[in-house]
Length: 145
Image 1 (cartoon, one colour):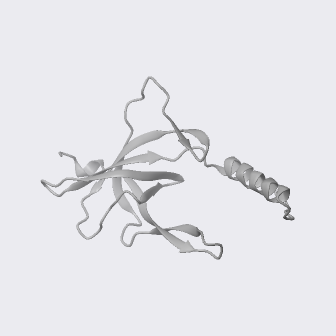
Image 2 (cartoon, rainbow, N blue to C red):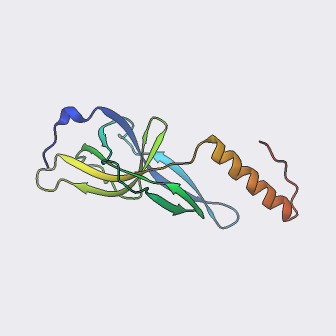
Image 3 (cartoon, rainbow, N blue to C red):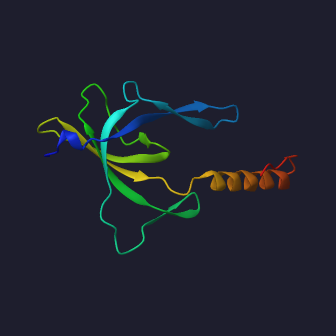
């Protein structure tokens, strides 16, 4: 893999998930920044646009899907895996396939998916819907929009 280190112009934060059990037997997922990965130089490259729309069916909803390639320097002391994600400003990229450069050990190419449709309006609508469902189930709930 040939790559110019000067192309790593963006700064990303790499995070990993920590699931904490809650009182009802489920888990609460919290994202924690990987030590030493607060400001990682990276190159984010989008493929050429396809002639068809890319959509993913997730959480009983269709949403736009944008796949990208993120390249970072090889980090021998850090195990980058598919459970992690990257933050770039307000954008979130879920890792799909990290591919290390095994021959030269200089770079890691991470195939990632940029999350779409999770803005403030979407979160408020989800909260309102959950509140209505809880109200219908007999719980007293105050809806804040």
